[in-house]
Length: 88
Image (cartoon, helix red, strand yellow):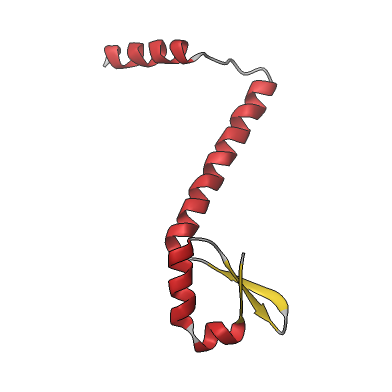
């Protein structure tokens, strides 16, 4: 975990930017000794967002499975896809 003060952010933006890009993890910014902000590179943020969206989809699929939605093996899925592509 990287923790920097708001003074460091204000006075050394370049250092914070470099750290964010090199470490690819959030940088926690404190103000008066208390947590205030989180700074991260756009690439790291976009990866987190993709992972979050994937988790939401997996959770929805699991809820559906638990509710009795039909499930398919890998082989069944492949056959269904092959059928769909053969019809086109």
